[in-house]
Image: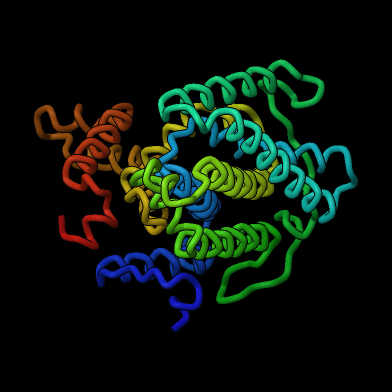
Length: 350
């Protein structure tokens, strides 16, 4: 009943349902199940990237739009929070103003890009978004006095969200502002993810899927394809900006490498493909697998190399410095064995 109220989109797979519940429970109880700075940071990154990947899936998976500007919108949200926190007094109002300003700026830029570019063929639109994103990244790096340039910006957030704020102990875990900060990220990402899930399972989402499958036919039966694509772009950009704002609140630092890097764009694209395009639930599994691999694959390889010291060749192959090679191999294998993504494979068995 709750699933029908939220979206009407059931996982339609017992294994997928179990995996999603495990992820939800682990993220909800992360401070208690996985104590320590690094696990909590990993859990927060997973939450942020689930929202970021889901917002991109709205574009790529449901509307069929290939965009390389998504991290630019992510950066708008992050820099919005940073600049508001620097130029306003430290407080919740700065976070709110920065978050809303970043989302508004992202939506407006997405609207302008969509208005002038979504009439062209998909590959040309992708190139236009890449050019705009690259120009913004260069501009951010050069406007040192405003954005901090390559060094980025550090700023203060409300004391209630910092480790200095202490509340006591719960189940042996010391509750401080860092944990409150984590739950701000977790619950906001969860709420926005459910909003996206509701959107793609609404009549609006159905029209987007029709446009993805055959835009000429959708236009012929009366739907304004450019208007729907532009609306989807604006929604996706605003959600990406919200993800960037939460990331900025968590890190208390923004810079070109953490929010505007093209590597992040490629990571997001990989997460969508691995999890399953046009499913939303794929964003959850794709982000979890990718972030965990980024953070722990090198450590696991180091442990494996230590355990196989007496064997020929294997310790060299498991050298932690080769973790990117194995990460690439894992992704190639996942795409080969799961051509429709993990969620698509679990739902159809194909």
